Length: 268
Image (cartoon, rainbow, N blue to C red; front, top):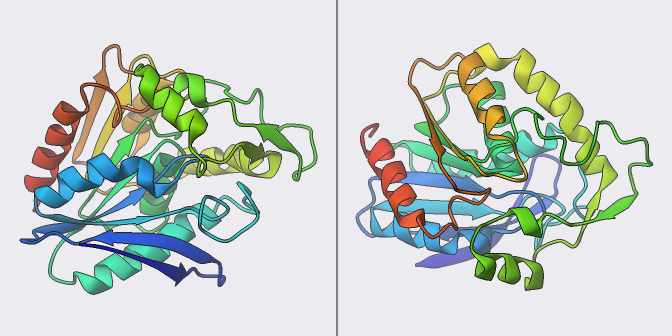
């Protein structure tokens, strides 16, 4: 059972959300998507999780797809974890007796890592996929870019997302994928990542850090560095040989979904 609604974030920005209810629910999960994309790119993952007894909450980051806000723009990197807090609070309110896990991919991985750093102890556990937690691969060049914040660059991420050409083709043709990315958004990663690194000891939640070895967008070294520096006692790192950025869309995705489900079930 799927239900869509708009939810008001901390500053009144309306975020588009979708809740998929599991029949025999054992826990809830919030998913944070990556840069320029949207929640429907996680349909296969969400269905798998629901089938295994996890109710899934998804939302679109501000300025993305059906959420309000200036397109692909952040005034401050804190808007990412604080929007996510709105969704996490909703999921926790509806599921007071069960853990709420958090999954973040790419920029959503930054969002999830920042949330758990800023608001520790609020999740049943965090799963990061290809998360931008450092900036070892200077995807946009050295930051900050010396351009006005409201300059927009073409979204050229498509090539690096997946080894499956069908996924790349679908990404490039997807009307909900944002075609332009603001310098304002890109430049917020500089203070955001510096803050994440400086506060690494504050990240203490259980965490499963996943990354494709052939990720052409976010260096797998980001995940290795993050893993080494955080304060969590319960932490696992998996680097997948020959997988690219979107490990949730790679041909071997079912095996990865299974590993995530087992990891969460062990922490119920």
